[in-house]
Image (tube, rainbow, N blue to C red; front, side, top):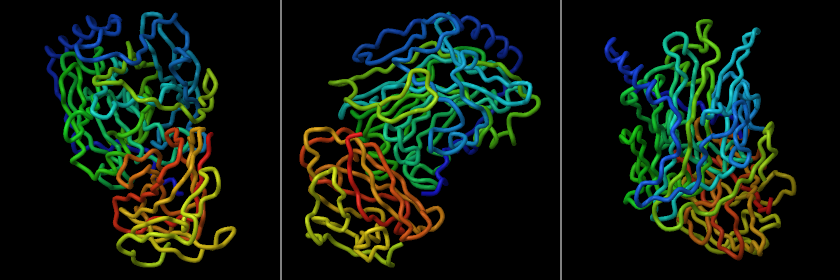
Length: 495
């Protein structure tokens, strides 16, 4: 799989607005910012909502955030993931309290620092929990009270604070973005008085979420500027609405929304019908700030400004709160350890009865051509180790069905042997669905050109814990009509 899916995100130029503020308004913003800077406790849930998780950052000064709640990311990438976190940002994330710590006043403080040699360090944290999602028919809110780094103008070039989420299946894979979904609740760059909100989904580049830009909007912060004062940034994930809807709010004012009607059902489900984990970070440089100001940071960029986070909380409305999820995957450098080419054309219609078997034990090697039923696929001679045949001509909307017994111990990982000779810009998702080709995927990974239709690669993906016997549907989803993958075999594992 090529690394062309870099999470470069942030080319939000088309929706960008510059707010020009006069001297009187600047003075007012400064006053309001000073008044709002005092720490506030986590507010009680509104009527009809229940708090399911929170952190108020009440630890002593210069202490790391609660390791029960947070993983501290370190370095320039996830292990085996895209370099520079997929965005081109230049800083090295550390677990040094100078970069990430509680300030003793009820805030998490993430600080970007440049050393004498010109190297930048900063901080990035993510929740251990990765199961934040609304129940079917319910709603979820993820919110935080934040002050962006208080720096503007040339001194701010390259500062990139963010409050966001990623789909739980990103952990341990790191190459299935954007299909697993990303919700950017608050982004800001270069000290501009604006907050950006973005949904990333589907395939990259292009697809229904216009990657790598995503479906984005922005607005100025109300009252005090984003840099001068604290504001409450809220993301509302509503599965009680028809169509299901995502909403972005700042200080209670809605300013952006995306709904399921804006894309196909498979892409929406892959991005939203599973758990997410929450991240807070302060990057320096990279695709988004560079798109607005050229290469950043510059010689004029000042060191030592901080992102302040008063609290983070998750609220649920509707029966059940968040569904049970997992925190599988390993992150290196944490302070508290780890968490656990096909022939041209496509056949049409649905065919039942593969060459033999049609599935079996989930933990054995299941040959893709041994399906019970399929639509849109072919079988062809395979040059991979072991020879035999592979399933080919796989494109958007195709699927194959297998009967799989997972037993009583939950399967948590899916692994498949794939090859692709797809043209540049053509990619898609290999998805695992249970009991119906239209049910929400329990796991998926993205695949693009691997070097040829018989150039084989084994790709892993996390799945939601699965037990018992199921009809397993492998479905293939892409924003382009072209064939994008061949499949030789697949298997499941408990770890």
